Length: 363
Image (cartoon, rainbow, N blue to C red; front, top):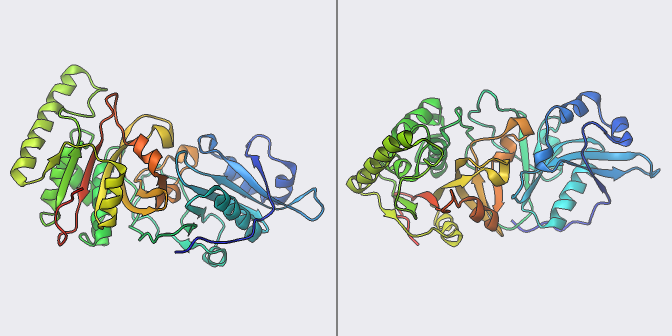
C-alpha cells in the first residue's frame, strides 16, 4: 500500500492528566466518555490529547485521547469527541509526521461507517479474551506505510501462562494449517500441556510440541545457549526438576527430527523468514512494552518498513492496554531486537514454523 500524502492538520498536543482535565475538553466531551478515559491509569502509555482549535481560538472543536505502548510504531485513538473526523485527521497527521507505521482506533463510540470514512479498516474481533481483559467490542486500523500485512485471528490467552501455546495456534491458523474455529480454550490448554516446563513454555519444549501437533509443518528451534532457560527466578530445588524436563525436550527434539540451531537469530533472519511466509514465535521480555521484566511469547508474522508486525496474546487492562494494542502491533526492528534478549546472559529463543510445502526454516 502506498504511503499516505496528506496536508498537516492544525492541532495542539497536551498531556492527559486525568485529575485536571482542560476546560475546553470538559465543555466538549460527554461526561460518560471522559469518565471512561479517567477510569484506568494510562500513564505508562504516554497518554496525551490531540486537540483541534475552534474558530474562536478559545475552545476546542475536537479532541482525541491518544496512547501507545512504549517501543512501538503506532498511535492508538482511545476515543475522539467533538468534530471526530477533524480529531482523527489530526492524529493521523501527527503519526505521519513521526514516521509511524499505523494508527489504531478503539471502537468505544466509533462506528464502522465513521472509521471507514477516515480511511480505517475494521480489525477482526477477538476469538477469546481473558476474564479480566478490558477493551472495546470493535477496533480499526489505518496503515501509513508501504507493505501489505495479512491479518491473523486475534486470540487473547485465557491464562497467565499459555502465551507460547496461543502464539503457535495463531501462527497455524494464520497459515491455514489450523481451522480458525478450532482455535479455542481446549486447543490452548492441550498444546500448553504438551509444551510446558511448568508453567512456562521454553523454546525447545514448545518447538517439539508444535511438531507433534502438526507433523507436516517444518519446525526449527533457535536457542543460542546450551543450558536450561527461564529458571533463574526459581529456587535450586525448583530449577533442578525443570532442568531435567528441558533435557528430555532436547532428546525429544532429536528423536522427532526438530533441529536446534545454536546460532544467534538476527533480526534480518526474522525478516527473511517472514518474507518466506514462515512464522516466528519469539521469546521477549515485557520490560519495554509493559514495564516488568517477564518472559513472554509473541508471534512475528508481518513486516513493514522499519518494523516487524507481531501478535501479542496478552494485554494489560490495568493500564488501558487492550486487544486493539496487541493485535497487528508494529514494533521497530531495534526495539524488538532489544526486547528479545532474555536474562542476564542475553540469550534469544525462537521457534520458526515453515509452510509444509516450503521446507525447513533456514538463514
